[in-house]
Image (cartoon, rainbow, N blue to C red; front, side, top):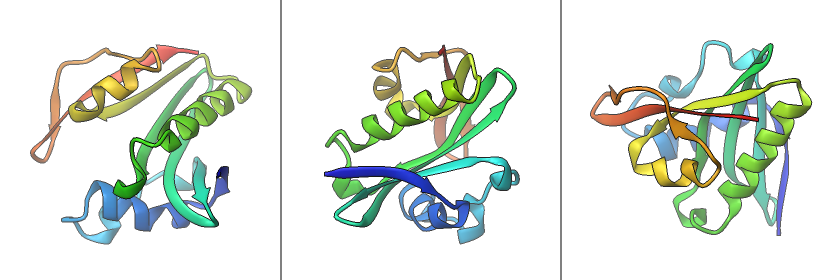
Length: 135
């Protein structure tokens, strides 16, 4: 059973670091406007297994630093977490949602109706594109 609940930005950092950027310094995973975001965690048996951060600016929303423990991927946990964040963005008045997606995850985002709306760009050696959809 998975439970999703709000968490603090600080609670997201260890998972952000270990999953997304383990080769970078710990502070690399902090976002300058984390204090303005909404942060959510997916818990299984009381343990934090996935995190995501939502930022809403008027009718536009963005999610960032979406990370699930590798042993918890491909089990529907990320799907539940992203659906929760999309619902929350709508509740907060957003009409669109976007993210910078690693290309290796593009098919996952397409399942949510998101499409690439930018050229490919790189963060270090990792290829990304901006993915977006209306809510």
